[in-house]
Length: 200
Image (cartoon, rainbow, N blue to C red; front, side, top):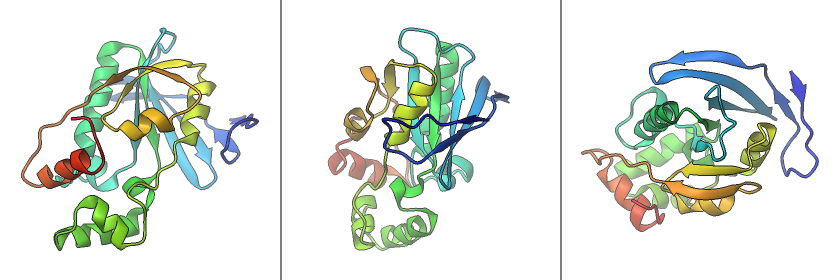
């Protein structure tokens, strides 16, 4: 384990795990955990990250989508596509951040689901619970990328907020990551486009 050198980073002290192999259905990766206070983030990366501009996905935790296969969002589709694209690229990583429900936590996310059942969209539901549309913080991304010596990336995202919120690295290209809407997430994707400004 390696201690953090946190000078210049607006984050809590970081503890970094050893690196382990992660053979997966998307390819063979390496994983490493970054513990920031009570949050434990994960870097899922190819063995080679020494290319000029690695392909990077910054993915916020979505237990209901990523693990349970919820059809209310496109999170699992995006995560799977990102891992597949990065594996085929041969140089890149997914930074998996522990900030469930756009930063409001699992309990509040389930409460937001209930409000969505009653007709509120994903952003209005957050507002009803007293939260901003997006409560996430991406400061840890700068630390994680700096840890690997990455200075330039191609960012896999549809979210314009990430283009301005991720600091300390040059984003040379935005690479879209598109999923087909379904019966249960079409309104969610519509809200992301119309209210969140997502670039579909």
